[in-house]
Length: 275
Image 1 (cartoon, rainbow, N blue to C red):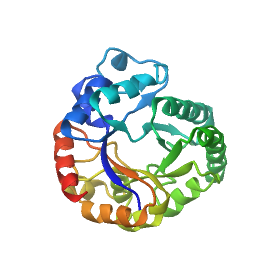
Image 2 (cartoon, rainbow, N blue to C red):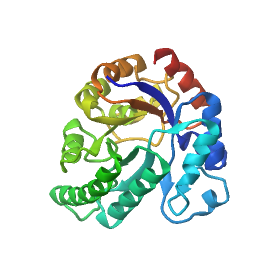
Image 3 (tube, helix red, strand yellow):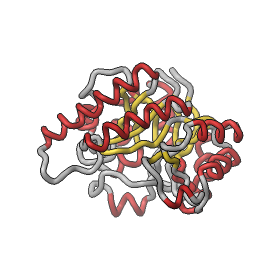
């Protein structure tokens, strides 16, 4: 049985037009133990100008660890979502993200299958995903980095589909980044699904879904960028924490995925009472 800690995905400052460093400091001020930074390829205007939280993988990876050290906070992992069904993108992106994470000091990189091409069959997509994950695992294993496959798109919207992706490559580096909100919106039982994958968890997205969004979208979508504040929506967090505490053999960070600083504040207040 591992330790459960509380972190936050950097999406909580997405709309505040501030830098990565500003977002890390804000997370620490709110009392979070961990942050989950997002990284990207190349260069783009908003991040370069300090108006967005994402960090380019052309930057020095130590930029992340220095910012965290200054705010006395740690990294639970990196948000490195890339379409692993598209190996011309996903393979090199994921390999670079793993090397970046290793140098920055982030133990996990999270990803999913990404949007489907219109011209490939399902079986072809699984071959493409296996290729990408095999290449990524060969970079991850010697560096001690874990790859969290998330329930987020067309194939991972069911427990069987997520299992099939995660088991395409037999590697100790490949596990599950379970997203509570995405699982609910897919129309699944989020607690039953969590019990199924809990021993394979490497990371957990603590995403709550408002009653209004659930009524409008459940069973119609495969996920959502961020949720509402933990405790404001449909997810029973005491039940989630109990499942993780009893079933997960490793330390796990509940990485809150919400859209505003105020939601982040309410989320940690709610989760701290339970953890």
